[in-house]
Amino acid sequence: MQREELQRIKEEALKELETLKDPIQLENFRVKFLGKKGKITQALRGLKELSLEERRELGSELNQLKEYLEFEIEKKRREILLSEEEKILDLDLTLPGRRPFLGGLHPLTQVIEEVCEVFTRLGFEIVTGPEIESEYYNFTALNIPEWHPARDMQATFYLQNGALLRTHTSPIQIRTMLERKPPLRIIAPGKVYRCDADVRHSPMFHQIEGLMVDGEVSFADLKGVLAYFAREIFGEKTKLRFRPSYFPFTEPSLEMDIGCVMCEGKGCRVCGQTGWIEILGAGMVHPEVFKAVNYDITQWQGFAFGLGIERITMLKYGIDDIRLFFDNHLYFLESFK
Ligand code: PHE
Image (spheres, rainbow, N blue to C red):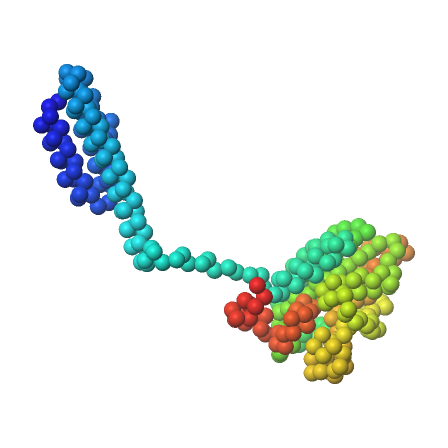
């Protein structure tokens, strides 16, 4: 190992360093000079053949060269990486970063979650059921006889082989009672389908079904649970009223109205000048329904209710067209973030 030799290595390395353009060249260069069998590594090893003085002099120069090259390789590596990235992004790296786009939950999803949360607090458990149903679960077991107008082709989407798109979430009552023994308290959110479309009706909309069965469940319990729900969702001061109604699967039946949130009872277009808006149907489970699921009617009592999510969401936020929920306009959806 001579001084001239070191000089040659040095010149070669510095000259080659200038030409490096990609990570592979860079790595080859590193191996060639600094690898285990690299020129500098070998030269350092060869030092032991020299006299003490030469060793000291050449040794320190070699080590300096080694450190210099290590530093330059790292610097180049970064430069190359950055320029590659810049090419990919095709932007000025001094620009501020792009903000990630933040999504939000759909207003209907938010209200479904909110309603479910209220009932969960009262000990109701969330269950689901299929959207494609049979006539038996959607109608027959719910005491809706064959001649009932709800079975009319106009309201129900029929599929092949007697299957249909469920027209309400009530078939989940039947499925749950067949699967379980009382006592039970369930809440069942889901999509339902009816052949109907205008500013207030969508062919697909959402309901939440509720069902409670126990040894002693009264009409008063039903009213208490519904009043609690309405005040949690619409506010403590919400006015409520219960009206007698009819459903084949409950007896007695009721509908619950809340004081119109738009006009606060004065009467407006939304409430049809009555000051009241209907938000749900409910009642005590009909003995025929208990018979269909083999529950002993001398032992069990229960109530059920069904509420429309779109309607509740429209009232809560003052939305006057149901189609806004399904048009996916960002300006609409973003106002619910
Ligand atoms: N299923 C009824 C409807 O869609 C609502 C309802 C559910 C009424 C449960 C009473 C009990 O209109």
